[in-house]
Image 1 (cartoon, rainbow, N blue to C red):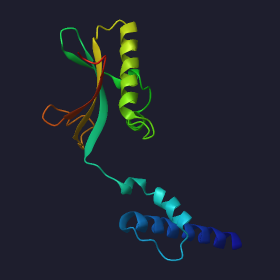
Image 2 (spheres, rainbow, N blue to C red):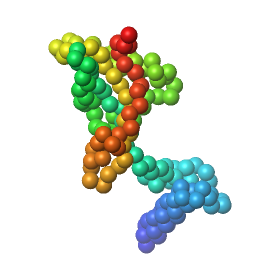
Image 3 (cartoon, rainbow, N blue to C red):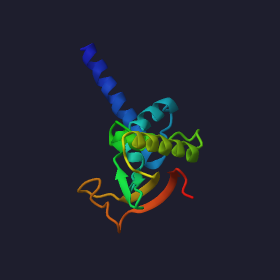
Length: 158
């Protein structure tokens, strides 16, 4: 009997604290007499409700051929992990100077492509953003939907 009461008390406490986290997530209201560490812990559980963007944005890698044409290089050659982790890692830490860090990434990719026999004369990194689609990540990845923002190119064009 006592174990049943303890289980129910634990469950009710958990539900109540989850509700406190949800209230803070949706309305930025902290219920009185609920310690802040509990609110922040259950607030963190509400991560899917904290931010929703309508665009997809990714860093894309391009290699330039001697004739001037550009070829997209698959990122998974250089970032061997899932798409979500790639999206987080490629944004880099706010501590490092990003422009120089992106330049080093482009340099490493350029050197690796040269060693593997590619005829690229330069490597370009650029942000690309396009609207999300319910039919797939790249469904709206078309010329009229994609916005491209230059990040860096290695070696720097003359």
